[in-house]
Image 1 (cartoon, rainbow, N blue to C red):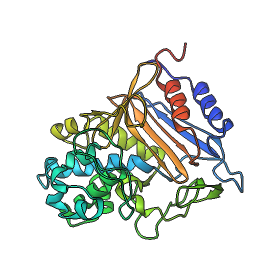
Image 2 (image 1 turned 90 degrees about the horizontal axis):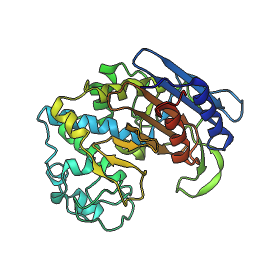
Image 3 (image 1 turned 45 degrees about the horizontal axis):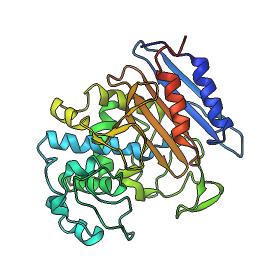
Image 4 (image 1 turned 120 degrees about the horizontal axis):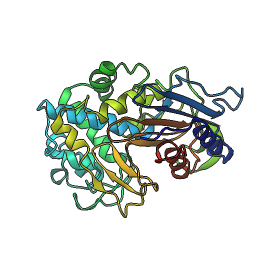
Length: 335
């Protein structure tokens, strides 16, 4: 793997803020030789002008799915459930009553790889008609909402407690948690800013740091730090968290072509692979939620990993993060 250039990464962060992608950005890169680079640009607080800094907590959005998927796979390894179980086995009548689909035709595996046919919606809203399960990839929050409910049914505990017991606790992820009740983003933290109102409509930039986003749950509700996400991603990539059979399941992917999703990707069970324009393939995930945009990606062996967070939600995240990942991972970038 070619060396990276800190000056080039710093310049990429500056470009993101200069292009108006968010108030501030943090990025942390780690290499197997112990190299650790941390950089920032912009601000953590638009009122005070305070700069962003290491150790900040931030919402990780849909990268929560990697944690939820890991918990489901660990339960499968323990024989507490099977990926071939139907949703109806664990949640009888839920899909039929609330989503207009057939829970007996959807498997747990199809929830995790987004081939359930369920549309992207939130339980309680009026959803579009579901498609036939197993037909194609449709990225949907509903899949992981249901997966989280299945975890709770299989364990008699909360998803938040299972994430802490099975992942955050053993790995020492002291800044990683799924907020419950009125809990939001702990200090230290960057302020989270949004240009969307609660219904997703356009709004002036406003502070949503303390907003109640508990609806996101297993699909996108978690909080973490750059250091914790490095530790989790590396443990996931090198097989520390899952037995071999479940590790293979997690990294078995389906195509996302035609789904109007992230280009150049294939989706596994809570993680995805992305082929960059330079030809390098990365693994991990990202998250976009009100006030925060985050990505954690690395090579398949977890040798080099990069975690990035913007404390805003109006960015062209594909352009921004492609720039950062090309800078960090492109062969011969130092030349």
